[in-house]
Image (cartoon, rainbow, N blue to C red; front, side, top):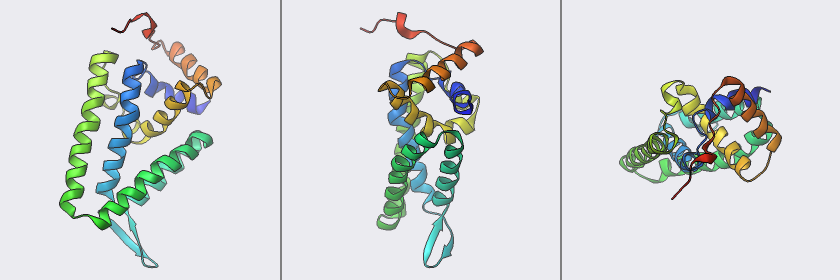
Length: 180
């Protein structure tokens, strides 16, 4: 199962629950602020519609998601489509300086919180040090999957990911750690 194999790389770095939930907030923040900046770059006009770098990036990433898992890709389309539309609106409505400020703050908060989660809770370095593609492109889809797994949905797929982690020898058991 291709999705399980791809997610296993990401999940190897994201097994501690607090770190996972930090990513549920941090990854969309990074994605949204990236959309805000990419929306500033119009590539061409088509029938009076500006085709931005953000639109091309979004369509490309979502297309990739649909090759991995149709259900999660659909959910990501709804969630990240909303972020994309909001970013495009911000670009039209707000001055350039505001967009760049949103980008800067969002990137610092998004990445900073994730580094914190990795070093404090996960006790390991972030996946982006080993695979930038996973960190920027795949992470939003895997965050969607993590939420569904935590809510008890798609348990067969969650089990397949866990089996991949165990086969690769990177499974971590955080259940022995007690929280204060």
